[in-house]
Amino acid sequence: MRFGVCYYPEQWPQERWPTDAAMMAEAGLELVRVAEFAWSSYEPGRGRFEFGWLDQALDVLAAHDLGIVMCTPTATPPVWLVRERPEVLSVGPDGRRRAYGSRRHTCVTAPAYREEAARVVDVLLDRYADHPAIVGWQVDNEPGNHDSARCWCDACQAAFGTWLEDRFDTVDALNEAWGTAFWSMTYPDFAAVRLPVPTVTSHNPSLLLAHRQFASRQTLDFLRNQFQQIESRVTADVMLTTNFYGEDTAVDQRAASRLGGHAAVDSYPHGPRDPMITAYHLDLTHWAPGGDGGAWVMEQQPGPINWTPDNPPVPDGQVRVWTWQVALHGFDALLYFRWRPARGGQEMYHSGLLRHDGTPRAALAEVGDTIRELRGSGRVPPPAPSVALLQSYDDAWAIEVNPHRRGLTHRDLQLGAYVAARRLGLDVAIVDPEDDLTPYDWILAPALHVATEKRVAALVNAINRGSRLVIGPRSLVVDRHGKISDRPLPHGLTDLLGARVDEMLSQTEPLTVEPWGTPAGVWTDVLEVAGGEVVATYAGGTSLDGRPAIVRSGNLVYVGCSDAGTWTRFLAGVTDRVPRPDHQEVFERTGGVGARSWRATIDHRTLDVAITLR
Ligand code: GAL
Ligand code: ZN
Picture 1 (cartoon, rainbow, N blue to C red):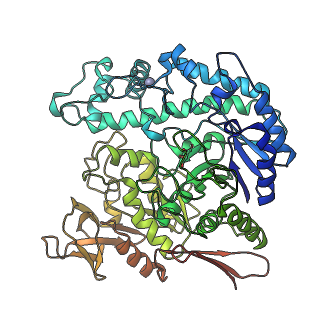
Picture 2 (tube, rainbow, N blue to C red):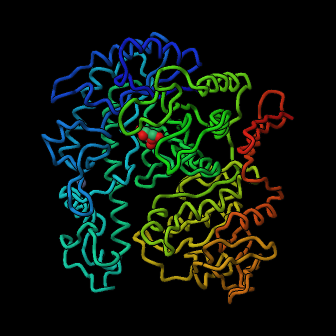
């Protein structure tokens, strides 16, 4: 595993760079990411390029054997460009152009922005494609973050129309797929389908879903253009990726990772505040590229940050634990964000490994020690899970546009199963339902909301080959346009299950699940059995008392609720494993010379890391 740091030479005097580079190398860092927000520093006016400083910075870093990750600058186009071509700016749902002054203010569909992006990437490649110190390229920065993927500009409106026509061919097909007979929304032609601007009350969820699918696809096109430009100019050993903020569902992160062949996540554990959610994001990223693609943490929280509501302190030993967690989830590289905190600008209270005055924080020594510790501890055996957890953005978006309970997210439903598996010490591969499922003994599908014939066929095939499939509430309910199936639910699996969903209910009472007395959580699907075996029932003094909560038939199980406590008890029973508390994360691997089994435990509360070989 390689370690590095995010660095902004343009924000510091040139005389300081050699000191910084020497300190980085001294700490054991090998990689430096640069230039993702540097556009105005190397092109202060159209065609007026000032690359001398960047050349110089790369030379200084290379002189200390630091490998460079070069970034394209398209997350922050400069003010001169925006003034010259305002049509590059995105438009909000209120129809107003977004202002410059922050970041991610452009439209990925606007032809003018595509042209400007291609131009600047070409210029960068002309200068740096063959630079010997560059080991990787990062395209853009956090595409879609800050809810920037969806745009309401004229170019998007036109492209949305074309995309719908390609998809549906006739407007009648669209009307049928979206159920527009409801509220008299039958569209006479494609031109009548407007992007969802504010209305008196809610929009048709199928329109909202289509907008999310479209926005993700447009972003992927934008990224693909850049990947292709870079790929055609650099050698095959150069790593290509883009980086996402862990939580973000604006863009299909998996599809984007596959464009470059590598996945990268920006990991800020103080965002979700729960080590299990960080673990979920890490696994999501680790498995995203599929095949033999690698995964990087492109930005790792190094200390206190500036953007959560209260920005709590980071105790000594915490950065070490976060680093171990990334290593144990199988990552190839980790870069801390950032080297020295900015003196000005929006993030001036975000810490780095140094202080504002350029002296090291304690975290720098901790990082150096952790790198040495990891290198000295021998190879961390990579995860080779027998458990797959299915995840896709289509499911996330379909629930996002129509959650049926305010604030409920696809990820909330996913976590019940994920946390249960992690409590049992099981490594989890988070994969797309259309990926190869053959390597897995257990397939967990806690929130597989969208039913397609292809998905159902793949699941039936997996069951027939001997995998055990556990599906969760709200699974196989809608088609890919968000319309509810006209078949018994879960769509396509009721015969195999020997049961069907009778009701899908959001709960306000604290229901439990018997025989364990574990919580049901906020969502309860109630099952009606026809041959399946009832494994657990609801309790709690409501009309659901005694109704089936979990039903099983052979290798297929339906769990009607989402709480991790219930999933844990169920999975513990069928896997014969003992759960650990959430603040302890266990990694059990085989491998390692002379060792039969290898186990690492992180205690996220006491901040201990222990490795045992047996
Ligand atoms: C990331 C972003 C960085 C920086 C960081 C602050 O999401 O990519 O540019 O803003 O957050 O924590
Ligand atoms: Zn647009």
